[in-house]
Image (cartoon, rainbow, N blue to C red; front, side):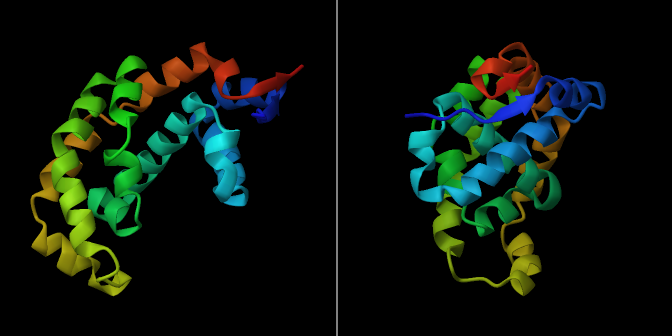
Length: 164
């Protein structure tokens, strides 16, 4: 049985007002994700899984680029999943196109670097895979966050149960 996360109406309204809905919902989902890793695919809806995967991609790629995302082992979850198709339906077309365009390269590099590098070696990764600079720039030009959050706000009941 799928259990929905809950938030009070005032918490959601405040998050929207302060332009922090993404952060509030992502953290709420991530908290459960970290507690329930073994059962998460059962407990989350497809919409929630898409939201978490997008959130992980956004957080990782915005801070350390796609190499950081791959280094931390998220490649298969982003580039080997239906994430692109799902966020395309949500209106994040440019981001979906980017995911599809770079998926083969990202999965290849993910396999190459898996377990072979330490955090101190990240500069070496950046130098070795310098083509990722282009991917990171393309992502930062259009992260898809606006489109994703428009979808989420318009379909909030798919992501959280609101307590009045």
